[in-house]
Image 1: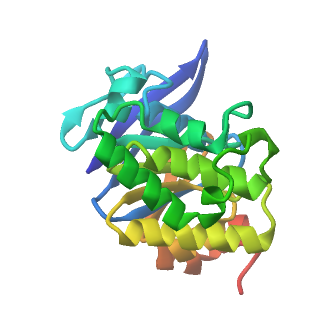
Image 2 (image 1 turned 30 degrees about the vertical axis):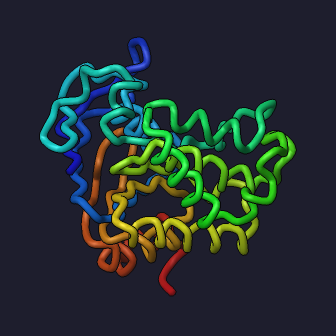
Length: 236
């Protein structure tokens, strides 16, 4: 479904990605692990067209998308939930969700998607007229995911969804991601909580300093001594 082939991304003269390649099959949850600064978010932003590649190719459903503008990539079914949530704090929950549907002109579908979001996150249904900036961190994460789902995406890119959340909220968010995937949506998950991510994912990639250094099934990565030592706090 998604092919990232030997992409390079630079910030000015500094190259942040050095030939990253990965693939995501339809219906999978694929996680990308790595320390801060490894290039995980840069990879997601390159897929979404926010950062342009200097080399390599990105294909979504066999179409080259790395030359497209970000909004055109969204229109093809690629949605991202950014790190830090980035909800529009001075807008209501309803208004944030409506902005997520800006590529969809079908009012009935927008209404269906909104109801789907409220079913996934009943707390948002209770706060439709509340300003997003007054929501808790967990509620803002729900809103950020809901906003992405409003565009009826085919693939969802999640960047650190557990960041700053209490353990019980993290568990709830991860269960929702599992439910979203079971409904047929493909997911790419960037996550510092490597253990939780690998328990959720089908496959995973490990990044270090702008490169993919390891890829395998999630179960094998969980059992890998080097992954345990670097990201899981030792064997358990």
